[in-house]
Amino acid sequence: MNTVIELKAGDASARLVPHAGGRVSALRLVRPMGGVVDVLHPYPEDFFDPIHWAKGGIYPLMPYSNRIADALVQANGEAIALRPHPDAAPHTLHGNAHAQAWQAIDIEPDSTTLTLDSPAGPAWPWHYTASMCFELTPSQLRIDLTLCNADHRPMPAGMGLHPYFRHAPDALLSYSATTLWPATREFLPGAPRPLRADEQYLPARRLPEGTLTDYVGGWDGTATVDLPQGARLTLHADPVFGHLVVHRPDTPLYLCLEPVTHVADGFNLAARGVADTGTHMLAPGGCLRGEIRLALAGPHERNSA
Image (tube, rainbow, N blue to C red):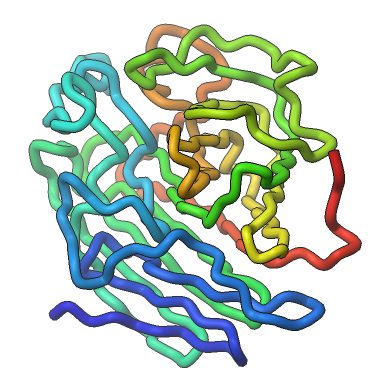
């Protein structure tokens, strides 16, 4: 059943599309000083392609984020073959939670929980379960993520969110991190190194022109960005989300700020002894959990370049 769930809190609203990979299709929040702001580049609610998905809204990154090189994951002392993604071949892309239908439970006017029971299969050969608990207030959307290993074997695990924020080229961005994993042309991470002074985003500044993909580690869990309607959005994430992906296409229709637990291809990097990848190995029955909050900032929270 292709149901859209709309959460309301005063003039704020969040539209959830469980059948479309648990996506948030639209989010409107109220500024502290008043006025409603559209936060997300919209996702089309009447269209869902689990392979060539529309770029918009927010979707979950589970049971891992980004790419696994050559669709081979090192786990439990062996290389396990996965199904490559056609848009990223020969690599995988963004897990499979966002390609499946989620179930809604505990639906209230301003909150609900989406759940997923994902059997083992070609895209991910471990059985896992997941949930996303949404709670809306006039100025904030809180999303609590949980990922659990329901298999009988230890499972490599990671998670995050992939939002598409409304964007203008002159928007200011700020965040604090320590490490850059330079992205290759195949969007795999290069050798990590400390961020240079010209790569820091404190104080807030504009992104460079053109397309951009940065994988950063040592992120402190907070980022702020201008929205086109003159508002400023603050992103807060629990410490488990120690990595951030910053992506903007050449045509700056949207900006992706993705809080994630691990760097791209992190499982294979960790197996080779690379430090600080952020990856986890869950024992049977083990879980990852963390909260992410999207909130409109007040004028006193705005930084300038």
